[in-house]
Length: 264
Image (cartoon, rainbow, N blue to C red):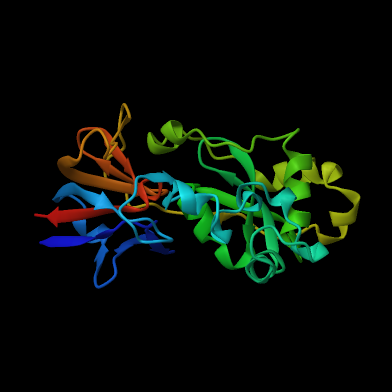
């Protein structure tokens, strides 16, 4: 069956296992139902997620012009400590920034290839952990805005990683760790103005991904270099499709690519 549309990150529903959906304008695919089937991906054109034009994608699904203009790609998204809406100070669009920044945020520990610290809006738990391919995660603090979450993450980065090895995550080269113990160990390093928001009793969340076979070596599919690819889907983890021949495809990393997908 043929599906066609612009790629956006897969939508998810937490369960045993997690359910994954590729959502297009007029259709969607439950990717779990494509496991053990042959999937063909054909790159057709670009479609910027902001302007909709057929322009080369620069970053995060946007063409270069839109990436530097749209409020949905402000620097505060990748660096929460640069948030300024709480000061009534605009970056690109104050109304949008207030909506996004002035809401509850979680600083968390997640384990996908190693323990890492991260930030997400409370409404994105556990979606953010799923997108990172974390098999376990725990909340550290819940704060009222993005800035406080950002300065907490910066303070903790000196004592725990803020990066994930996506290759290790995809190969399932992982170990279970006591995140409660890690949270206690990191508590003294939380900034003083955030200490009142420390979460004492939250338990670890464990996540189960729909993977039949993990890759032994990871070969990344780049649609610019390989505009047509065909393989048997063996798993989905994070925002990656995992194929039988060890090829992996980062759906989120290919946002803004308009594709045809055939499932046999």
